[in-house]
Image 1 (cartoon, one colour):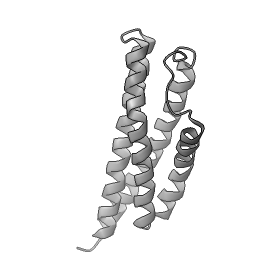
Image 2 (cartoon, helix red, strand yellow):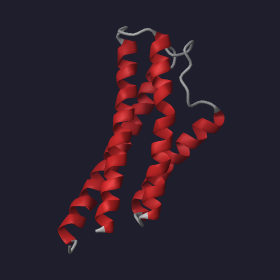
Image 3 (spheres, helix red, strand yellow):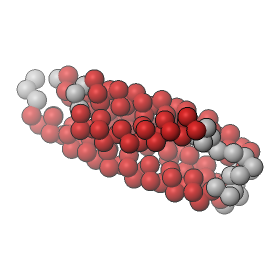
Length: 136
């Protein structure tokens, strides 16, 4: 039962990470099609960056403490990348450079989205296998 609870937690953390990344991509798309001004777009995206980093760190911690070492090692590169961005001060979107960096920032978020979808599929497979094999 504890293993099932651990997989459910990882599933919900991954869904929350996907929604945060999706929100950032929607903000970039709104900016690209000129539905929103650069200041508001940068403020909305920057507001979602730190929660993304915190949820990613807690996700790695949950995977480590529940014994899901494969998922932990799969999520470590993303955690390291986020940590490196934060230490270098490159984690926030600059209002004055947002149009110059738009394609790079979108590409970065799309790669994260694909990576997290892969983790979600692996998590769902393990969740289904756990439900099928657990004896209540």
